[in-house]
Length: 225
Image 1 (cartoon, rainbow, N blue to C red):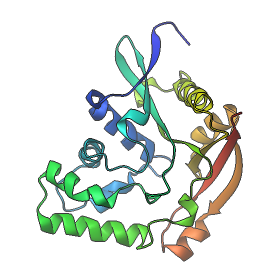
Image 2 (image 1 turned 30 degrees about the vertical axis):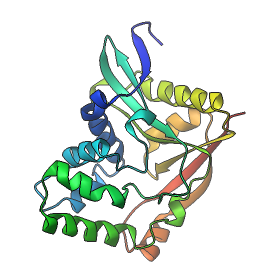
Image 3 (image 1 turned 120 degrees about the horizontal axis):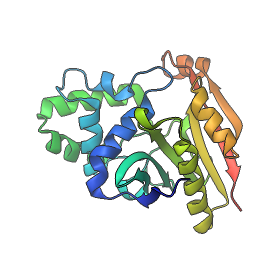
Image 4 (image 1 turned 45 degrees about the vertical axis):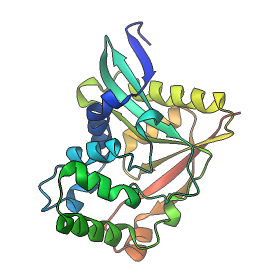
């Protein structure tokens, strides 16, 4: 890695950047962020919602302090989260217990908040521990993304390796990561870092279980120690 590149832990000052990173991470391979449909009619963009979610500590897929940031000369270019999944929380992206705090940041009315809540539950279901999201390891890597203008420099692979090293330093035995089927760039990055696929949920699973037109996901695992 060039000497000008550094890796550091994210801080609350990085929230606007992390919101953009999370947004970029949701786009491939369908080029659409799943928050956008849920936010229709709220007057809130997906990036603004993600920023409020991070401010309110409303994500189940990594808090601000879970992120590592790669920057060059002080300019952040890529980020990813590594965290230990909690059995006390659900496995879906949003902590519904923090929705009111998110709504307050966004200045939503109670009607807007309820509309969003209803849509979220309709998408993810009343049982907020879908089987396909059950954590497959005790160290989960999530939300890996590089700014579009900085891609092709190996930053994603560098992030993965840094988070794997952190998982090892914490004494975790296995690391897990998940990719939406069809996101071949991410799949190649994960496999080149040593991850191996072990479980795939095809599109039929989602059409039968959730009534969704979705390409499915594949879980990858890697032994750390």
